Image (cartoon, rainbow, N blue to C red; front, side, top):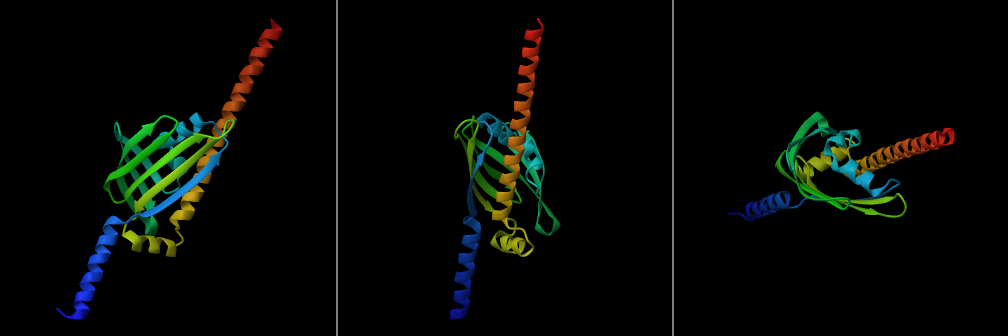
Length: 186
């Protein structure tokens, strides 16, 4: 075997190993002006994800710990995958991994109270996009930057959780005023 052929084979083998085992990885944190239980409840209801993740078209439960996801990908491609929830610790942690489909990923979100009616949320995500690292480059070329999109999705999630909290606060205040008015009328 010639030196150039040997070099090519070694490079190709290294590329295949890298594509098979190395995932893109990102970690993000966000502070949300909402109580821990509101944030956790919203995030743990996976069917809500299309409300704040613009590329997620649908999420549906397929079993006790399994969900089926459908999403838009770059270049108008649809991708689907099934995920297993590997940890669900009330008001603390959610972890998952894909078990089959077009996308490989695993992740974890942790939640912590950080003051009066505030929640700190930390997302750690490992993913292998469709078409691997080449897919990431093509996505960026067409204006889809996964890091930027995760930041935007977390901001949309924050706004949704804060709106829910504000609505609940208004409803609670209205109930208190109603009870007070009834007592004063009696």
